[in-house]
Image (cartoon, rainbow, N blue to C red):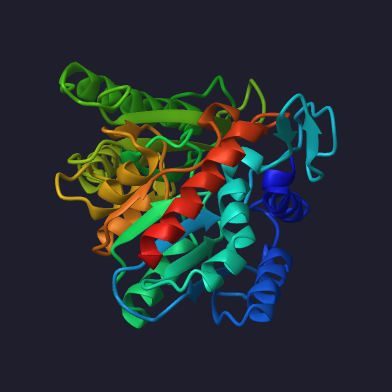
Length: 385
């Protein structure tokens, strides 16, 4: 284990911070800041509106073009309701695996990079390595855009961005975009025997929910058979529904939440417009009985897809380091699309398997830690040449 001792120490160090998206990540950010400052590395915070969370970016090496950004989110998903065999915020090593919340998704990638800062500093880097740690990725890639804007505005343009989501060190150059919505439906309450007077918010919500399913079915029917995505079309799903108070009362209120996962080339805006237009029709129908009825649509998240590109410096770098000859795509969303939208070349490549993400007893194998460390050292060597 001595060959990756520093990496294991840093994985344990980062996992020990409970950075569930519902709480602050500042304790972790402050710890990383102090460590980088101890090594003479200047850091930059980009906070959220109320200052309870922050992105952090830092440049190691010369302030010149051609560097590589190492992007990783600091937040993790909740452990509540999951049946863990150990404390999820204490790394446990067992059977050549590390267990803990975030070891796969995705603190190991950032931990490996941070553990190698001394090696980066002694390598006489000719081009910089830029750490980019974000908040609130798990609830819709909410934090990264502010940091990305600053990196683009204030730093020399990097050649590549590597987002360290768990890919088992495969090189990923495409992911779906995501947008999510909360829909609140207000009806008109009467006794359920007086359906001619009342307006059921639940029934109206059911029409809207069915519209989401219809939009998905239309896109499934016209799916591109050559698409590398699985499924090969944009999906829309409703997974949260609440409404009504009692069986014999016309429901006065209902709400549901739905999201879309959009393949590159499909328009999030067109899907939103189609649903909104239909919702306005449902609302108008409800108001023929009661003028106070309404349908309110709140957009919660909206992150772009990552489109595979023939000319992708980031993919070239990652393939050269890993030895892979090809790239792949994934169905989940990440901040990679946001970096691409800002004009940067980007791939996803990191240790661990997405199959372990968000699960109880989340784990990463020691072999993946070694592979991630080998990747990072090769990247240091490349940028020192």
